[in-house]
Image (cartoon, rainbow, N blue to C red; front, side, top):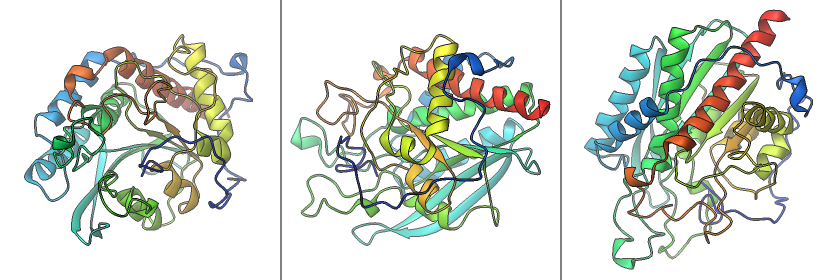
Length: 340
């Protein structure tokens, strides 16, 4: 969802969610210090390429479930992953939204080395918000969001990583999952805004019905809004609760490859996002890379859920910082696995 008003940041510790300790799962090879992370030879993430994938999704228009733009863009995403050598599974399902609308949802799974036991899950959502309910102009509150940052940027980073993985293959398994129906939660202008379960519908479904029976990953990394101008990524609270070692691994890796300014060593708030069903239902330790703006009321930046979430506010430097960091984590894990 993105708690409170969806990804709403809060410094209050939430006692309502069950604690999953993730015992017994391999969580990476960092003990929290930069010098313990051996740097593998990772591919060079191309921010221009990721920018073009973001624009390509936006060219379809808002990808709101049950629309033609949504259908066409889903095909584009799946075909693009397949062109990069991934094994594709389309998980179609009908999901009831908060208002009873039946959403024709499609989770898109793109896998590399599906037979490998050591796996990393990389995920984000691909649908658009049906309403710009955080726009400063009330006349825009019922306008669909183009969603360049939230979240065409997520899929674009995954597509660029997939292109590079095809060129520099791995021993370990990678599963890219593009979740649907993340952003169909109750709008701020509705009478009832207190239903957190109305968000993250695609990931809730996948976590209860994974694409492979008994699916396991060693850990997961969720990316949400990873291209917005001015974005930095604090350590999200539920990520630290469920997968603190992976938080350390990612933030220390960013620092080690000179992207620490985008991943400051500071705590953020607790948000409800697609990583929660992965942790709490699927039982896979998963973190959330999501921006925290200290000067924006929502915490998510000035374009969040507004008509201004467009390509004009996408920053190649942010795409690069996130994409290169996650790629480095993947290739470090692959190198470490090969040396075990």
